Image (cartoon, rainbow, N blue to C red; front, top):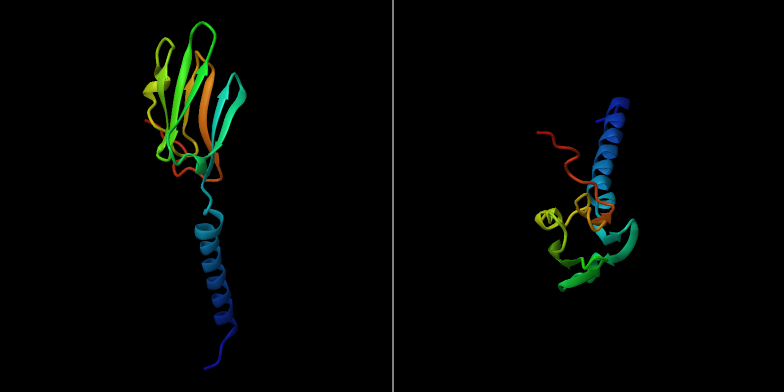
Length: 127
């Protein structure tokens, strides 16, 4: 059986498609969440590698006017344990553990988020 020009072109396209699929699923997306970032007043307060969050850690941040925020983090995620602010919306946010999720406390000017190379699964949701 003799290979024709069309057979070779189809084989090359098939090999390229399988290579592209393999690269996208196993090489480029094989990265994880890298760091937990806590920002206070627009400046980085702490940047913790996720690998160091094997045991639970507590971050206590004091503010003026007798305000504070207690942030807990472990391998399952990060959440606000206690906060002194008017509405406590940041505490009601719950646990975050993926790139793209964040916790924001506007009265205390605190932002908590994960950074990494993972592209979130959902781009946008509208109700």
